[in-house]
Length: 222
Ligand SMILES: *Cc1c(COP(=O)(O)O)cnc(C)c1O
Image 1: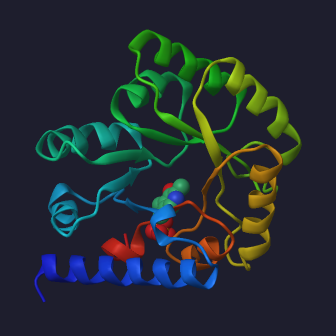
Image 2: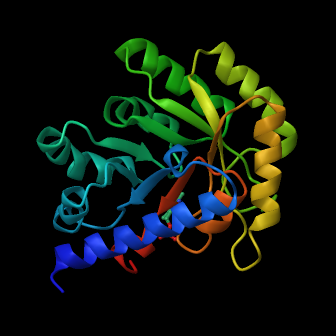
């Protein structure tokens, strides 16, 4: 297979798996956005997926996104760019200028930096609040107990908060963590659920994900 045939085949497989999981859950597959996480991959690896119809892409570092995406976006104005990784407050303005969706808002200082950047630029990327759903000391995300205050701060600051995001603990069954994030989103009246990666996106869809972030299953291992 050529690179573009294999990219199209991998994309079709992931989409089929999402559709199957959605059907099992009695949900419309159209309600689930597949974000192709292209971190570390050059434009040459991304173009075949765009050609195969993929529109949502994700990066985890602002600098890498700035290097890769302006040219791709100029050529394909309908792409939707997501920032899925941790964001430093001093990169907030650059992130707001570049991306359409920010998945890792996890602390009041970042809320303030994003609000300032949005007010200055007039751009308002949709935001997900990241929750440290497994309560892991080394992991990004706000503690579940801090979520009400963070959400209030984000809403007060005028951020367009659309949902919650998590990266569950590695190496153990993700389902309970996805269920817990879904409950938090329900309790706070948030419609969006950004959860599920290459190893567990079908489980995430079964438990209500509205956005799955898939890298390896689409691009190969990094
Ligand atoms: C890299 C990354 C992904 C994609 O991970 P894969 O296992 O390669 O699918 C999803 N979400 C975040 C936050 C990431 O950093």
